[in-house]
Length: 138
Image (tube, rainbow, N blue to C red):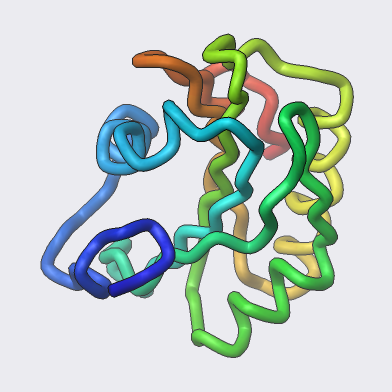
């Protein structure tokens, strides 16, 4: 069983939109009393390769470094990735820290040729996709 509570990677599953990704992880993340940052890794055909919790934070912060995230992605031979984290308040509104982390992860992914496809923030039955909001650099 992986860290998200799912029974191992579901390589037959294609998560090809922010909505499908948020929906897949929503129930596991929306009621947490602390922030968790999850790394979702994909194959070259955008099939779910593996997902795991990278950091567990406090009630309003999660410490994550691009180094740690991409070390895991490279060890798992991920072709691309999506980062998700929850806001325990249930309100997925973006913070300055969310936007800053996203920019650093995007730059690192570009350099390492493991693109960051999206950064999704999970709230209570709602989510925000930085890609959908136009906040993913091109």
